[in-house]
Each structure stands twice: as C-alpha cells, then as structure tokens.
Image (cartoon, rainbow, N blue to C red; front, side, top):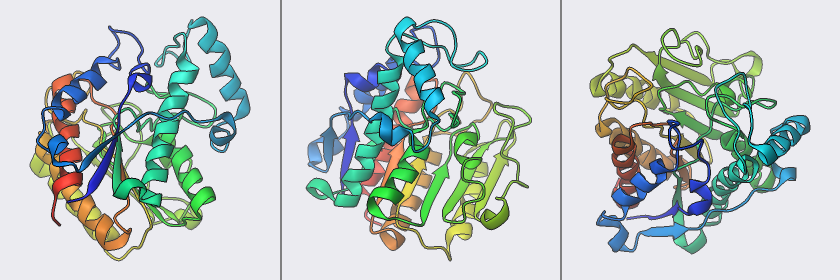
Length: 320
C-alpha cells in the first residue's frame, strides 16, 4: 500500500479550450466523480494536493522566451491560435498552462522528497507531450513533461529517467527534444502515425547520435485491442529490463480506449491497469518507488475517468 498524491483543483479545470472543444474542463470533473467514489479515497493512501503555479524562469529551461511571451500576449485577448490551427487561444491560457506545468513539478518534488510519505503522484491534466520549444501543438501549450525532466535533473541531480507514454498520439514534443539524449529512456506506444496526428513515432525512430538505442517507438494499427497493447508493453518490459533509472514519468493518455472520438484504437481500461501495475513494480525495483502519472489525452469522458482511476488505484493499492 503506497501513499499516492493526486493533484486536483479549479486551477487545473481552467486549462480548457471551451465546452465544445474535445479538451474541456468536463474531463477533470469526470475523473473526480470517479475517484471520489473509489474505496481508495477512504483508505488513507490517497492524498489530495492543490495545483501549483510554475514560474517563467523554470519554463524557460525548455521553452524559448519569444514563445513564452507570445503565449502571454495571446492570453490577454484570447483570440486566434497558438499554432497552425489546432490549439486555440483563450483568455487566461498563459496562467492555466503555467498551473499544468507547476502541478507536474509539484508531483516531482513530492515523490522525490517523499513528502507526507508520498511515493507516487498523479496530475490528471498533465502530459502535454506535443508542445515544442517554440510552438504549441495538439492542444498542448507548454510541455510539462520536458520541463519536468530538466527540472528533476537541475534540482535533484537525477541523471537517468524513464519516460513511458501510452497516449494514442505519439509524444513528439518529448521525443524530438530528447532524441539524442542517452539518459532519457523513452518507450512510447501509440496509434501508427500513418493514420493519426502527429504522423510520427515509427519503429525506426529509436534515437539519434548518443541517444541511439535509448528510445522505443511501438506504433499499433487502428483497431488494436488490449491484447495488442499488452504484447507491445511486454516489449517495453524487455527493453528496460537491463536498464537503471531514478524516476519514472508515465503519460497515461486514455484516448486509446474504444469509443474515443479522435482515435481508432480499441483498448479497455485493462491496458491502463496492466501498464500501471508493471511500472509500479518497476518503480519499486529500480527507482526508489518514484513514479508520477500524467493524464494526457482522452476525449471520451467516461473512458478517461475509468482509465485514470485504474492508474491511481493501482499506484495506491498494488502490492507488487
């Protein structure tokens, strides 16, 4: 039984592109509705944490200052797009995005310092893996994952970090930023880029230069089911078996579940449970128990609520 911190609050609900947009505040409400009914919340293992605000100095370790200023200016009017037409601006988008990053950094602080005995943490609105240094993308304004990796290295002198991404979309904003970094191990299961945004993440993409061989991309065909996912995840288990790392970051997007309006995969929440159980065990074996989960994508509210609940319950109660 492990204390698990879950970050919840209105500040995270504010990261919303409007009621009619797939990424809206109803996603967080649906998750809270599920987790609040879970027996885990009564067990004492689940600790609710308030969102935290990142500062500009911290996010400038990953993002270009011109881009940060662009988002800040756009935030005043809320007009137009923050990329080529995928990620709309809205009034307050800058602060809302800074809360997402800050909350993921809080998750890092909490598990590394073992605050209140918390070894695992979950930020449901984190996992904005498409944002690049100088641009938004795929509903992602600031890349909380990239920021968290740099933050963990600078503040805590961590070197080896494992990043596992099971969102239906390839985590291009993380992969290409760290493609040549041998100390960031990446394993990413997603729908084949031939069929889905952002059109990247092919098996041949396994790192460049010094990073060659430290990355694993596992694209799945449309219609892939739990059995396909688990077969792919077993490849991740084999891939990391001989590796060591000091922290696991798990982007557990729920848009691979059957019925998501934006993708073509057919998982159930069993895939999330399998991945969470495996990584929970690996975290205790290799990373001092340190693992943070990030919600990522998912645009069917019932799906994401159930999948994320499985992740949190597994972190808090799995005995492995």
